[in-house]
Length: 532
Image (cartoon, rainbow, N blue to C red; front, side):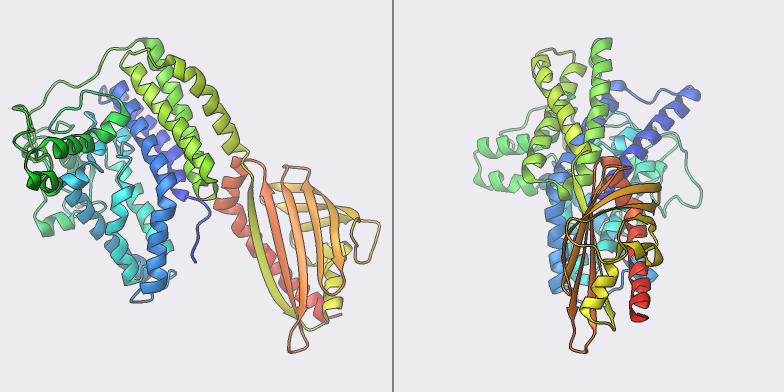
């Protein structure tokens, strides 16, 4: 079973925040005002809702993809082949186009995508403004790739590329780009996609490439004579991310309950986006696909103090959300649920303050300490990494284990070990202690070891406290005789890191180095043992 210990999509969140700030400062330097504070904070709150749903759902939805790939794939593709990556670059983009298009054209999926289009500004904050329900539906469209044989790690990589690419095209700060227009998605083509002008509505669905739009008749270039204006055809009149996420669903559910025609109760879900039964619709209602003329933006007055607090609360939410989504495959269900409640209540309070309401301040007095607890819990959440290596020796199990358990000789064969301080020059037994200096990618560390057990010819086990960074290490050597009168030697290294910074650095960089050195150490151990 292919498994993923972390959700690496979270890595992009801090980078996106930096790019959003850079875009804002660059536009200000040019004298352009293309950001509204309330719209930007609401976009961030919508993004936080997406993070929550992704943390709760993605492990399971991606699990279905993996299950299909493992049991029903029609072809085998190597994840190390460039051809595989090229084929499924187009494959992921193709199926994204069709999810995106159907999400715009049919009621049943518009509720899972509408949130991305509700913003009345168009800038990098719009890129993170997503519907909380999108992952609950979009994953189904990619399942044909699993049947085709797309390796899960390739699909995940291509999906991250797709999402990363789409960030930079949400801006008014970049004009048309010659040679790219009409082939790749660009800021110009994506401005058209987000515009509510009748001439632009429901066009340019391509994620990375717009060749699909040209092939299937949904291409529309940006016109110099028609400036884009943004938002949905029917105004939202709220900053609440909960109301914004539920708006379309609530309308359809109410219409399904109240319409008199049974055919409409079911049929409305599959009608064009925005369609409503005649006995439910008001005179001022318009189909989303109709578009609309420009209108005054929704930007309610609020006090400076409430604006500042809303901004700080949003930054805390993004900090917690980043750790939450990165660690989500590792977290227990109770922590996922409690974290989701804390984050959702946070964006509810934030939107209330931006609308100059004070009724939720008592809730915030409870939620803020809970948020700080949640951040502290995620920061210090213990994550254990396991590295296992096996190799075959031509000596007996007793000889092999006795040599490996002689810690005074570790620097001879283990690349990490620089110096061992011990009073014995033979195999250490349970209760013996020793100190070690090891080299790591971030400098020299001091380890304090205790031998936990030694059974000659079977197992040697020790544990260590890293005095430098606080990590805990467990090391186990096991040996077993083979049918060829040789010895199979297994080295199991388990290390538990004390904080999120080290966990993230280990996941992204250190673990690969440790695995390489561990593999080399066993090869050197094999040479030493075989020469006894």
